[in-house]
Length: 148
Image (cartoon, rainbow, N blue to C red; front, side, top):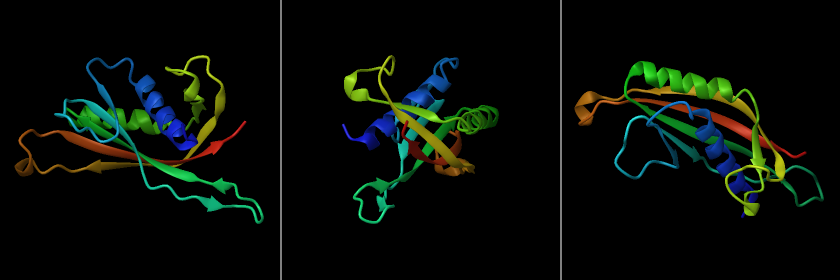
């Protein structure tokens, strides 16, 4: 499995562990493609660019962007979930070697995703465009793997 996929899984497992106290919440890996049940947190990554950072070396540096989409039942739930995610992103996210097993317990650690540029965007939904009014937010952040 590629390192980038392991990073994606780390962000997903991190989001899943962040909401263990919320009954009935769905954590989706990527945009939810089934019927949307509320509340749902969807974790998705953005474009990936490899950039060489040292002359004469083929290693690349990657700063990646993730989006965590919040689909909530009401404004209060949307705000609480978005703020929880944003404040929790102030700490790094551990990345494990998922080739050796699931879930991430007692696995070798590959490093930490050090987060930066944390943003919350509240998405306005026009009631006339959807059958069911729901509340949305998008938490965007960038991160770089800090290898131990």
